[in-house]
Length: 145
Image (cartoon, rainbow, N blue to C red; front, side, top):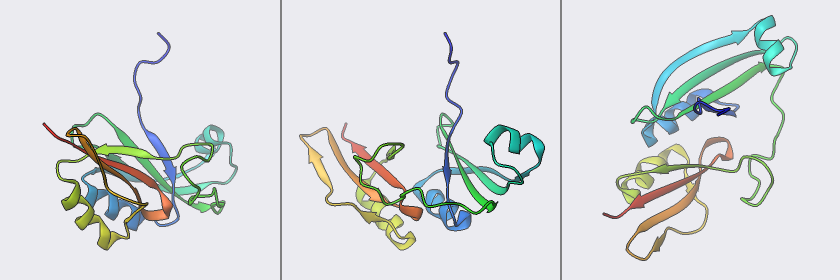
């Protein structure tokens, strides 16, 4: 077996503080923040003279992690953060929530916008896509018992 486990997904943002606030409200827990620079980092990411701040956040069950990076240098470039779901590349992160309506109410003050509708599939799932900070697409799902 080549893969032992998944460690994290990384997302580059321009406002680390508001991104951390949004995902904290969603329910992720801040594991830590760090300043990243130097030859080791440059060698790994392939950008000379890079400086960034990162925040590692984890799901409450401690199974998954998302790393958010804000680059000081070189400046971030637009990666089509508001591209539609059918654009090539990483498009969304999905989370299971206990109460979708409550989650949306808590996220709206942080800039969350439902992409189109909240939909219910039979008696199984209530779900929607939300645009969060930086245009990050998030799928939220509430499963019915």
